Length: 139
Image 1 (cartoon, helix red, strand yellow):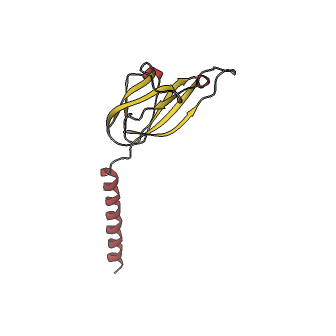
Image 2 (image 1 turned 60 degrees about the vertical axis):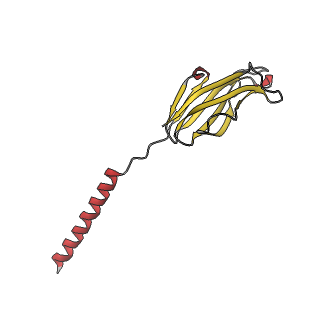
Image 3 (image 1 turned 135 degrees about the horizontal axis):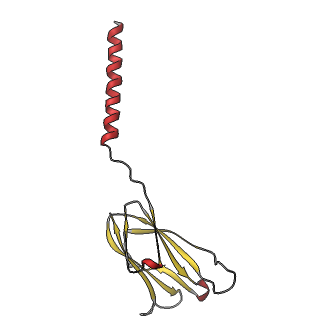
């Protein structure tokens, strides 16, 4: 009777080991999400992202003039704005530049254009206003 119980336990242990091994072998690996950083230098270019990645955009700004970067409504629906912040001026005083930081989360696969403009909130958009556009590809 003892050898039969022993063999059943060994069969069960082997079966569990085999199932675990096959699950690890054939299950897709979880891709780690990355943060991709772009700056003013990427204006007019393209950025390649994976689903789940975070896009961090760092644009120079001078808020003492009343101008701010803002995302245009017709910007790509592939990205969701999840946060904004700004750096402190490197030197004290009025009129010192800062960096405005936008953080976007990818929502789905596809391609589109991320559009921002540098405007005063109380003024209507002008034809010659400063813009930042970059092509976004999410795979």
